[in-house]
Image 1 (cartoon, rainbow, N blue to C red):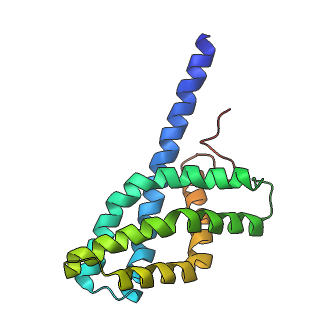
Image 2 (cartoon, rainbow, N blue to C red):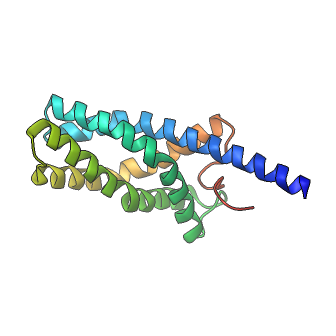
Length: 166
């Protein structure tokens, strides 16, 4: 009984470490890529700043759930560390489009609200469309980047699954 309890603590610590790495990797990645997308979406400098500041909080709250979600998509599609890299990138794309597109719509809504005094649904739609168009590049590179950051900090990668129950 005592050993099982110790194992639970070790797993909890690994999960917390994974969550922290997921947060840092998501924030660093999306700050750069998000700024470019916000600009293409038609946001002015104040809108870009508002969107990126709001995305900091959003990414801090959603990065660990996104890591968890991505692992679940890997499991659902029977993709693992031994799967071909192209298959993994497609899983990253599927995970990204089913999780991040709705989150980005909220971030853009906040950005347009603060820059224009109301939610500009045309700009939100344009931004989400741009993200969807660029998602074949962004989703897979974000998944790759998150896994590299996890590996750097000695955490199981997305295809290995740290959030899985043992």
